[in-house]
View (cartoon, rainbow, N blue to C red):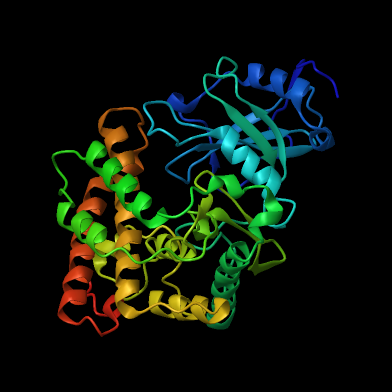
Length: 389
């Protein structure tokens, strides 16, 4: 491995990686400094790519948390992850933690990208960062990848396979991974409610609701702690890489920033917080970020039933109403944190300018579920929510 950085790769291999675009000005960094550091510090796994050149860098447009970049070398691509600029909640954007989770979990779960290097020195590019392999395949975002056309049957297969991947993660034997210390013992549900409530109050701006009634209800109706498992905490279609030869089959799971040890049903609820389906109201459909509306996709209720059947989990209707509200509230907090950054001009990404509207809609949706659960405590509360129009 050569530590020099004498050449810069051009576009000779093309730049047709879906979602990879020119780097936004506020997210730019010293590419030559990064390349020099990487050439000197990559693990042996990184020697498959000639690191003696300065790569071309593109930025992936998806995601609202850590920033993800494509490093295009002449003989292969790598991926770089780093935090955004600006103030962060304590414990978030921890590159060392994310790198460690991927490194250790990758020995037991084949969907985890292989790590190549971790830089915890912020003077190199302005923030810590880590580099990993790029998994070749398509990532479904708001729509299926360009050129991927699935009929109802194959869409249903994709949906099942994605939920099966979540089941596989929750089934990993925690004791074998060396990641037990990610957990903090009993009280996971309470800590999650308190932590996300605190984040919302700190990020709230004057043009969104208080969520106080929702937060009070979540605190007062917490389910008992369940057996803990590794939870991804950001499990969505746009964090999944599909097999290029069979787009119904996942080959990778990305974005391990928020992974911890906790209640697997909260992981499922967090996933379904993003699950906008075909019969949701017009405004909610406008904020859809994954292709869960397609014919053949399970409804949220069907996903819960399928997951419980696969895992042998039992959850009452009133308990699931709580989990669903928590999942939606958590999405609202994330959206509000990003919206606050946008209003503070810490990012110029125009997709964030409407996030305040999404926060308002999510509060209304949470309150409707709560009202339905109170009126019909023995009904399937999460199936009684009216559509927002």
